[in-house]
Length: 400
View 1 (tube, helix red, strand yellow):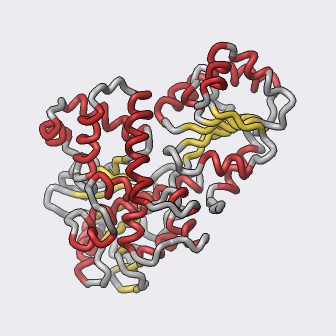
View 2: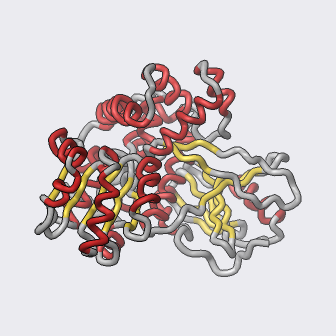
């Protein structure tokens, strides 16, 4: 079953404007399926295959020569042969055919390092994360219960192939550790890295403390930072940065740690069924992670830079998410409870007072499904994230 992706129209447009299109994202996020669907007449080459990879490595000119005459080519897992990018640059400069090369890759940092040196100005880069809530809804595949969504996560194969999520995610984590980690870093103790992964999951939604994680793993803060960069480069985690607005108060300057997909975090936390989430102490952090990840997907799908932050001062005032549109700031509180309570809005009221802007352009995203508009802001259920002003700024709510 093919699931329509929101990013598809943008990819089609970019392929008519740039000779190279790069689709980055985690393994199994749907990059290959989407590329094959949009560019069905293109030749497909999987660089994971040893013979294809060897050909591209040992004779890059001959490899590209063999593709001449094709309408276009999809080079899957390009990070396996980053050296090929220099030769693609020469080919592009000579022939300049729009949308001829479609590249996919699972390692963000490695690819970007090479691209910045070779294909700058010739390539359009997009990021494809796993399915969004809206994409699942449009395909009539979104589970009705929040706990089930948190547990199953958003990887396309779980839905399109009707695979049991627990087994699929466990195999995904194991494959990720054995393949991607070894490709990026020479980590010999994979069991220690898995413990590190579990400790990160146990800190979902919390301020990042390199020393504490290192102490629990027996690692230096430098190693922890290096291993976190691996998780970021392979789209397992993201760090939500604090917003700089201080309103004359001292700010927290440490980022918060979140997972792009809650199913991976659930597996690492030994959560074996949706009902386990009913009383789990990290249910709130998992819900925050799901909401923030979905907002990231909306921005990436629209080709916009991430404008998401959190705000917290030394006095304990905190807003879970700040949308920074440059000339406006939109505060969002995230609560996993299924019933709206007045105290959900208390932090928003405090923030707006500090900002000297008692606006109604404030939001609460909660674990229920009803929308309510109150004087302190708007409450949206977890199924209504598309109603947040993620892609455009609201009228009047000026940052001071």
